[in-house]
Amino acid sequence: MRNTIKYLQGGAKLKKENRVRCAECPHGPRERICMTPGGKPGKDCPTLTKKILMRKANGEYRKKPVAEFARQTAIQEGECYVERQKGPYAMHPVKPRILEIMEFAKRMGYKRLGLVFCVGLAKEAEVVNELLENRGFETTSVACKVGGIPKEEIGIKDEEKIFIGQHDSMCNPILQAMVVNDAKTDFNILLGLCVGHDSLFFKYADAPTTVLAVKDRVTGHNPLAAIYTSGNFYAWLNK
View (cartoon, helix red, strand yellow):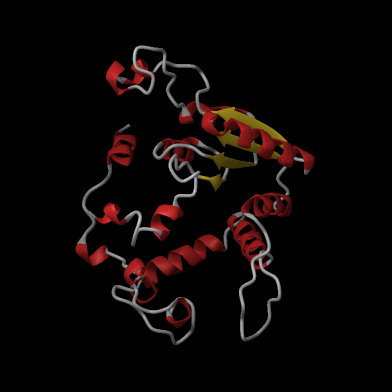
């Protein structure tokens, strides 16, 4: 219980010597040491400073079934592009994420898939479910409001609810996880869960999980739209 509370509340402050700053690297992708042998490191570059962790991670990749999972993931990544050649390399993507997910699941021999979605994307979930079943998968789909438990059960006040003065069902990612666990799914797909609810699902799910789409109520579930326009229309995010 103590570890769970620490997980939910956040741990101690990150020690200065443990900071990694890949997001602040001044070098272009193909110039970085992690991308090109003999490349340039950034400040606190983990490729140079985390040798012990690198050896530990490499050991994990040699374990079954992690080794096969990682191998198939890398193969799937490569097959998402066309016209691969030795050089000069030109990235030409050809597969949307939904197709990539289905192909990867086939590669891994997964039969039972969990479709874990927000009721706000019920129509999208219906389409995705049909696509998965047309590909021969057996699906277990679970909506976020499963259980119909009122938000008061987790201490939410009436003025904090979306539907003030009315019944407002809480999102229940723990029950969603338990439902797909009970179905013994091989692989789970998240569709539009809220920030934090997705975190709880990841914590309680038994099977590996991928994300088809995340929730962004303003941008049509395309959160990078705000990032791409952070220099103009969404500049207020910096203030």
